[in-house]
Amino acid sequence: KLDLLPQLRHSIEDLGYKKPTLIQKKVIPIIKKEIDTIVIFKSQTGKIATFVLPMLNKLNKFVKPNYRVLRGLIITATDELVEQISDEITEYGKYLEIKHDKINKTTQIENLSNETDIIVGTLAQLNTLIANKKLELNSINMLVFYKIDNIPKIKLNEDIKFLFSKCSKKRQVVIFSTTNSQNIKKVFKKFLFKPVTIKLSRQKNNVILAKHIIYKINQNKKD
Image (cartoon, rainbow, N blue to C red; front, side, top):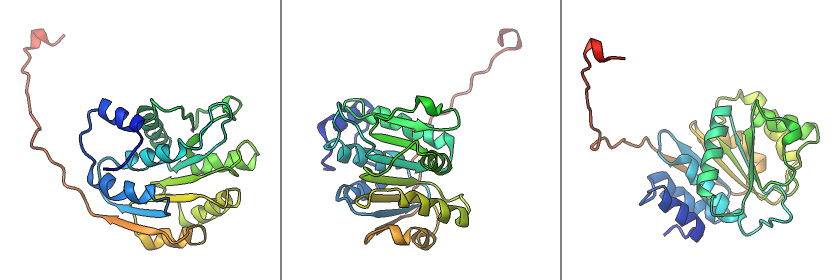
């Protein structure tokens, strides 16, 4: 029903997922329409797949294995989130010819490939690369901002303004935030075109299948 590429459906089946989560069901169809989107969520499962799947779905039609340019940029707040997002791109995109790189504190700049389709990184590290002319954004088709709420507003304003000044004018922007949509809209106001805002309340966790087991081990068997 989400009308994703067969290769993406194949990778979803490999992972054993049978149906989309609430956030995926509501948000993926909107992102697939190439509309600027703001998603406000408290606690939802399947958040990363909600933007990774439509990004891979969209960028696949532009990708040329023999001539790669940067098409997608995913910006987050921590190195841990960079790792999580990178892992999910690998899992969902394993049947596609889409390359991605991650930028974190351990990234060796000289090893960063110029031939990649998607880059995942933190806002500060990405801006450092852009300022040092190590990264060009003039071919970007899609930008995703994920959980950047903890960046101080003044710093966020400066960094966002600098990032978009180097970006392609024709691009889709998707924002995933855990805070009030008005604050996000103020920061991104100049850079969004008729954005759709989707608010999702806290999702209850289903623990019916939880099973508790206790193993009692005698002192002489602990080793």
